[in-house]
Length: 159
Image 1: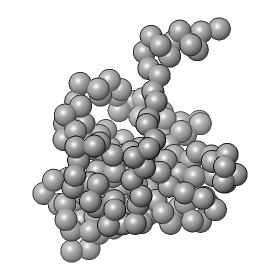
Image 2 (image 1 turned 135 degrees about the vertical axis):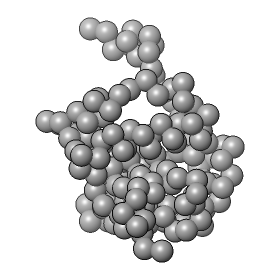
Image 3 (image 1 turned 135 degrees about the horizontal axis):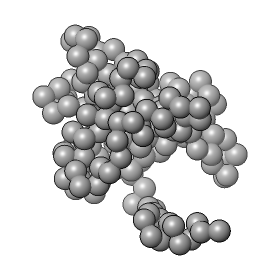
């Protein structure tokens, strides 16, 4: 089975948004998808792109995606990459597609001189945790994510 990974282009926005919705359903978070393909297009390919997407294909069919963006480590004083989402369609899992998507991101990180690639994984997702450990990732049990959204974000960010 030949897996190819390529950078997404503007024509892929509807596909990527559909994959995002599939991922949300898998994670039981469909209710959290409040954005749109139009917003995604603006954020990926607009005047100031915020993120990048890699698409994995098998036999010219979309098999999965990775969405990521650059960040910065103050301790390393080097850029890094945050992998927001990595998703492989259910019928195609356990075929090396996730590995190729992660390899694509890692290669981009190495080429850019990044000090690390980081991401989060849901604590109930044992298959993903096992996969990430197999790839050499360390699961940081002593760190917790913090998030500001909605009213709390608006209040704190008000002028």
